[in-house]
Image (cartoon, rainbow, N blue to C red; front, side, top):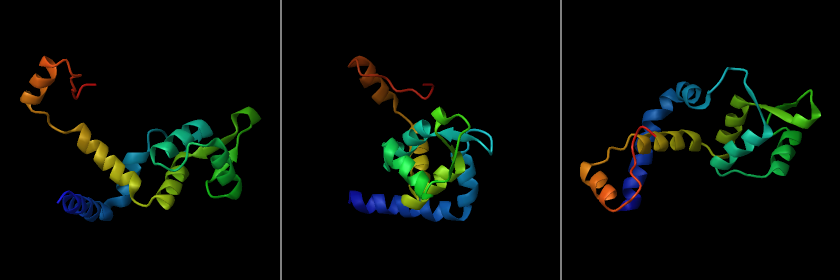
Length: 134
């Protein structure tokens, strides 16, 4: 039962999202300017969120192999600089559809309505109260 509903949900999301994939990517991925480049450390955190790796050695290996596009920064201590869009292109190549599904899921959870009964129960039982303003 649960698996069937989950499959229906995923199918519905993918069916409704696929025609607008490029517009959605622009909205989901860009948090800065078009030419924003990030260092390896924030890139590793992003790759970890998408269950790819949390290892600096793997990321630098993939950069040297050309799997992730990056440039060496002028200051050697800063390491490589990765274009934000190239990083998400790599994530989409390794885990097709996961960035969009994760964004839809996060949006769904963020906008999930909570009943007053649940909030009342949580407040009377000293359970952490969830609010949309956090």
